[in-house]
Image (spheres, helix red, strand yellow):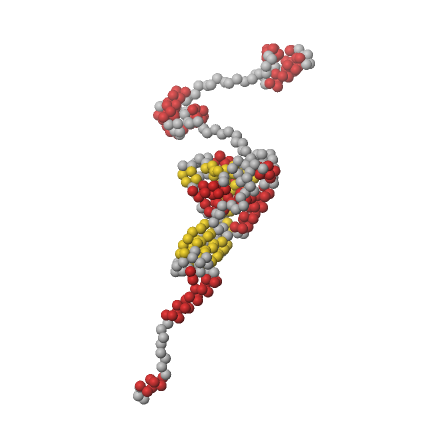
Length: 403
């Protein structure tokens, strides 16, 4: 059969050059009957579907359909065993080709997706991703961390914060930092079913609901396994690992955060592949549709009350921190932020402790003032416990014992 190009060439020779069919035959070598049909045809040639040839599998098609009807996911190996017992002697290749064609008819309809469009200032997507390497935290130690990521899907503006725990106090601190970097409040925060966020049944935990209430924003908690609903952020995670982390080294958590902020500023100035627009320009337009950040963001610090134990140390995040030994037995309010750990006596308001927070573990930190107080108290207790012993002159013993 002629190809389309040769069909067009024969018609050109006849109608443009005015050649006879004999001359066309001489130049192309095509049979004169084919030339005659080509000149009579107004449509280019096309290949239709070929008739299906008989297959060794034909007598067993009904049995295959019965097996799939009973169990749609039955493997090709098991189906081959079943029909082999019935006399099939063909290869597994023709069976696999046949199963690829008919199996979808027996499976549930696959999930389909529609193109998602975002309104300015409508959503902010949050998630967690793990750095590929543990973060140096001092004292010769490293620790697994998490990058809390945030992205405005309309402008694709991105922010990230390094944390070391998935409790809401750490997540809230990370969200505060990301929202501050993005510069405005969206209408709703999008999270998957993180333990500190999701209470079950699609409902938020009380702490997360309180956080959103303080910001006066709504929330969306995604269905299980529905990572596609925040696909913009999932793609950014691959960009973070491949572009930010690759080829970098970090001295400590502060250095990691500093380099992450600098990289974030850089990528927010680029032209985004999906939107075909500069991220910072779309972010500026998005700010016009968003609410300004409140003067004070929700307080993310951990707070709890305890009594100063006889051994005046507090265990927090795998470390021991000293407390004022003069306050043993007193109730103190402890406050732990990402930077420091403080304690105040509830009855007097006296400062019971102030320590820089350390993310390394298995360490003990003693304030020099607390150690001096301990030494003073120990000395006083030692002096009160010593008995008074009379010291007599030796001459008195000489008088009692004859020479």
